[in-house]
Image (cartoon, rainbow, N blue to C red; front, side, top):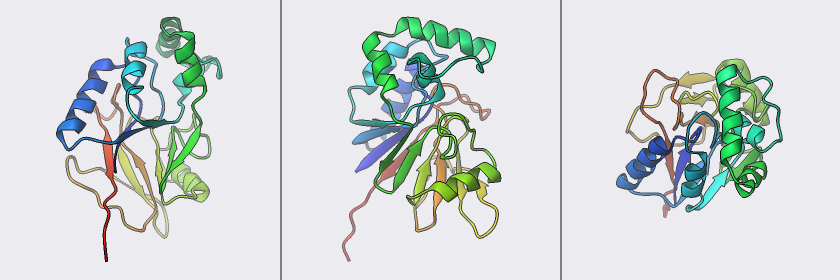
Length: 210
């Protein structure tokens, strides 16, 4: 089984299409695991939801998804984000809003826990440092936790002391062992890591025989 791991699509249809095409060229995928914020900022919320809906997908909610669905206030959004999310709400059908409103804050698939921000504050906290990482590690029941929200890709290792953040090596496999990890695949629709290209991750489960 091969899963395509996405976060923060943010209604960017061109970036989403590029990611899906690239993943297909690299061996394809059987399912999509989405880490929230399917909408917000970008101009194509409806087409993005329609495209993603054609795949087998496990998705959790993000803060932008919750605001559009009327389950969270936009009062803490900055001016541009607030204007974008109000515009987005006017572009979506009631069924699309209901879909976004029904997404869970946390989901578990195999050895992975999926959440937008962190396990301490699922749709609000930016997991970017040792303290927030440790708070999530304490709450993890699975071996791996997948997060988004920050738009910055990283791997966080659980160590004997302070959690260690390391960068992905682009295009090369990262073998998953027995250590617990927090993994952020980066952002599809609005990268903030000084690289304008969309970022995603893929997980491949390999059947082995003794």
